[in-house]
Image 1 (cartoon, rainbow, N blue to C red):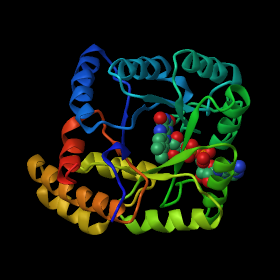
Image 2 (image 1 turned 90 degrees about the horizontal axis):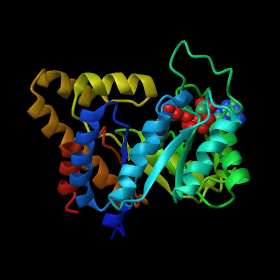
Image 3 (image 1 turned 60 degrees about the vertical axis):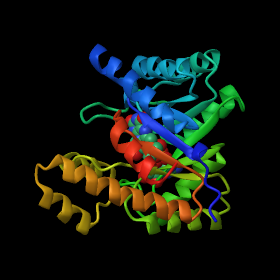
Image 4 (image 1 turned 90 degrees about the vertical axis):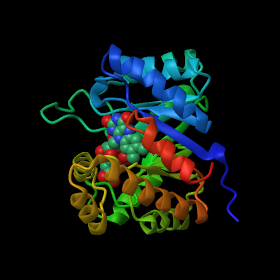
Length: 280
Ligand code: FAD
């Protein structure tokens, strides 16, 4: 029997770009609070492009009474800028941070970076802020797209964990075996921190293929074929997507995962329908 509890869900959001999206996000957030998430996290545009938006959105969630964790990426950032943000978050009572390398938008050089990899950022956070923050890092069951082999990617993940991470969230995937294989290999290397699967609800065929192409997540052929067959029929895509992702989550829960982190894309409906299907 799985010991998975309804407190094991966490949710990810991105900072809204304008006032209308900001107001919409407050409504979305209130709906999703029905899930009693363990915490929510808010993404960060690499190079600091959403710095203020991330901090403001984190503060909005804190005001709703939910633990909120800012993402922080080191690519394109100076040590001084990172330390300033860490101090700001600490002074605001934030206790959890998602520490990433990040990806610079094309055309934006990384010459201002004092740090090259997420493991360097984890090291900085520990050096500067001690144990104040619970540090989440990213993991890639299907391998990070820039890694030269699954073995080297795992080596780099282990380095990042040993630099002081407390838990990890994975890139999304649609094949549960990829997650279990990665978690087993990490455990064999002595990794004991929780590795929480990141789950992407399926709501939009084109967007899913675009995201997956960028981040190296495999969309299985049978899912691609079914989505193509639905064409512009959004309701069928959503219904099919909810079924597929619910089954994936159930398989992961049955296999003993320590939590589930939903990439909500600032949308309540898709995540809520999967959560309800899971009977939480
Ligand atoms: P790293 O762990 O540094 O790894 C990056 C690459 O470098 C990998 O190929 C790794 O194998 C390699 N590597 C690591 N260390 C070394 C080393 N010492 N020597 C040689 N190679 C090494 N991006 C954003 O911009 N903002 C966000 O808010 C954001 N949130 C995310 C949340 C989650 C849960 C996930 C999974 C990803 C997120 N991303 C975000 C995307 C992420 O920034 C990219 O995937 C990025 O390309 C890698 O970031 P990382 O922290 O995994 O990097």
